[in-house]
Amino acid sequence: MFKINDYVMYGSTGVCKIADIRKETHVNINSEETDYYILLPVYNDNIVIKIQVNNPNTSMRPILTKDEVLSLIKTMPETETVWIDDNRERSEYFKSILKSKESEGWAKLIKTLFLEKEARSLVGKSLTKTDEGIMNTAEKLLYEEFAVALDITPDEVLPFIQEYITK
Image (cartoon, rainbow, N blue to C red; front, side, top):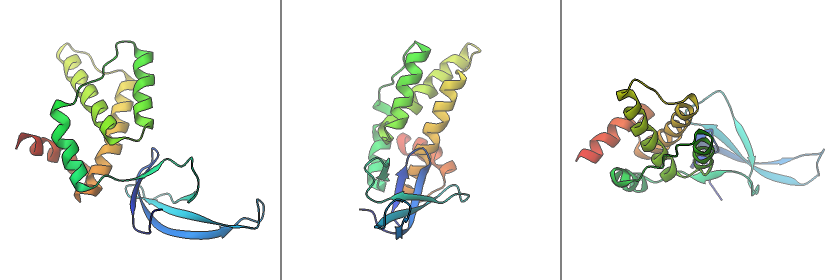
């Protein structure tokens, strides 16, 4: 069970802070009290999310620790890419990696798409809109998580990774 002030990754929303844990009674459903996490997205102050504490279908996990982030960054140069030539197959596979909520998978996606984008730009081409969207989503999720763990802003994550790898 998470505690108030814990940071979590929540679905495709990204990093959220648990602002409160409340008991609420729903008369329409039953008269029992249910515990809810009140989540505040760290990088979007326009919404508040309420999630049942005991909901097994909730896609919520703790964010990586600073040590876990640094360890993952260290492995990035050796990370294999996962390019699939068939657009539909690739899109389905990449979307499944996004939904897996695993930072390692997001890093692999970003590396794969970044290298493909570079290769295509050399011949005057660009990524498909789908690939570009997947890359942007993976970057948003990974950079937000790294930013909170490293106590920097999401915009500082890529320069941090590049500097850390070259050391």
